[in-house]
Image 1 (cartoon, rainbow, N blue to C red):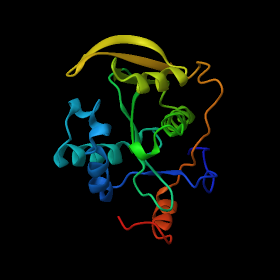
Image 2: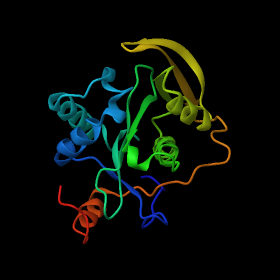
Image 3: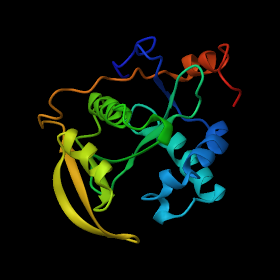
Image 4: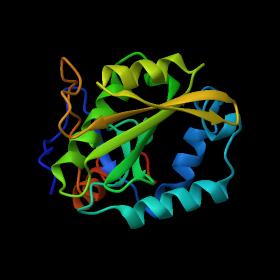
Length: 201
């Protein structure tokens, strides 16, 4: 059970676990050209891919520390998405995230990422988190470095050269520590979705 629990941040942000009803919302978020520029091989993902990704994440969720979460507040249901999925190495997870361009420049990507990394390290099954990006994606590279991640290896993506960075459980991590975003459980998320001003799923 994660210790990252609170009502909400001062701006009302929270991370709620993904559900199969979120497929359309994630598909719409991922279809923004500024979002998929360095994701999904630089093209808008089809709905079948998103459906499979959400279903896999829902299946991975639980006490393992893996899963997918959506960033939301009362007026915005799909402000961003962050995911920890299995990585080929034992006891490792791969971090991915995306954020609506309207919310760029507020430190939310850093806080989302650090929140789920902290959540993963609370579990007894994840010892390291890996993230990768194209070299041209300087914003994501900066987030990885601010998380305290270190170079892991060079990789080749469909869009060109990239790198992977890694953070281990015993590493120092980001300095200073980013603000943690509260994690809602499934029951809290469903109640929150019924709050006034929250668009229906």
